[in-house]
Picture 1 (cartoon, rainbow, N blue to C red):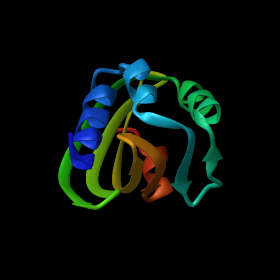
Picture 2: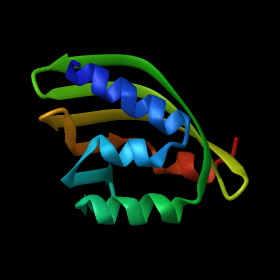
Picture 3: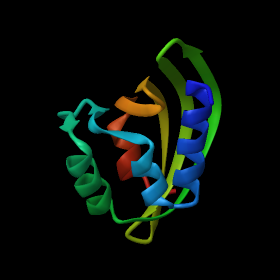
Picture 4: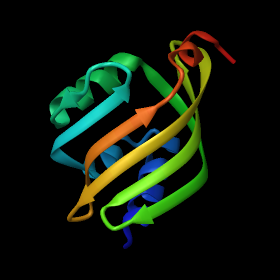
Length: 118
């Protein structure tokens, strides 16, 4: 499986809200950074943050994907339902993989998207 295929599987897992599969694709020492906020370090911190979001449905659309060695870049629209409200976020994502798992994940987006329910 290519690194881009791993990220496609990651997106598919989000779309199923299969969080066990989402976490299985992450390295234990992952660094997850929603830019511009502070990065999270380690799978437990990521799991805690994702749980706090209260996500109960996802519709991630992958528009473009590019792979260069261990780095995969994505252009996505993430539509998530949190607390009963749908939010649509346009995102550029950067993933660094090692041994088939995500060891760094950075998402770049406009935080104002989080306040606009769609």
